[in-house]
Length: 185
Image (cartoon, rainbow, N blue to C red; front, side, top):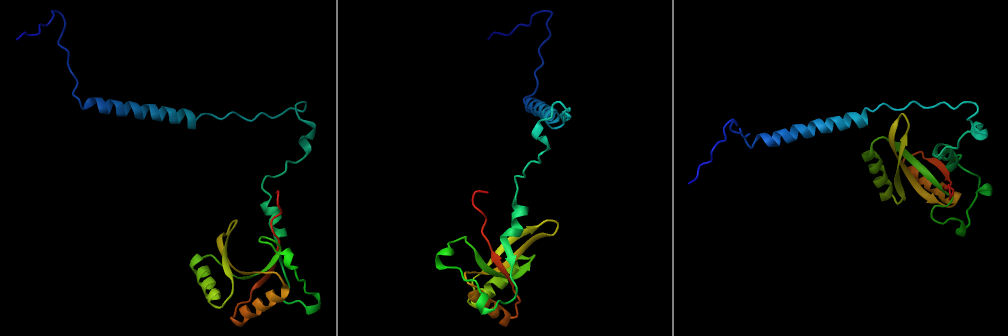
């Protein structure tokens, strides 16, 4: 067997143990990750440039139309009806005028902040033969509410009958004339 000879003047190379390399790679990765996070997240944001009078466009005085029209359209979608209408003035929608999603009437039986309560009332009304469903709404500053709605009805006569059935169950419902969202908005 041949022995390796050491060259004079050169010290023997010290080898690192195998467990050191994974730790070196881990520490290097953490340092590089922290540096990338710092550069991209804490990067100073440029200050907005205020246009001078000569740079302003002539149409800049016109307010920009909001992309979100929900808050202005919502009051137009539902109208609260008075308690009862006389038989002469009852508006009846013609049969062709009530496709799915068209104008109709509904009753709001209740509104709860707890889904289980709304679900309980919906089941109770369904057992009484009323077409009830739950509508989830979020009211800014107050949270999520679950409205129990009954309907749709396409005539005020049918709405009045359902309202009387709810009243016999001890529920004083809110009568609503519901308009669909306009298409193309």
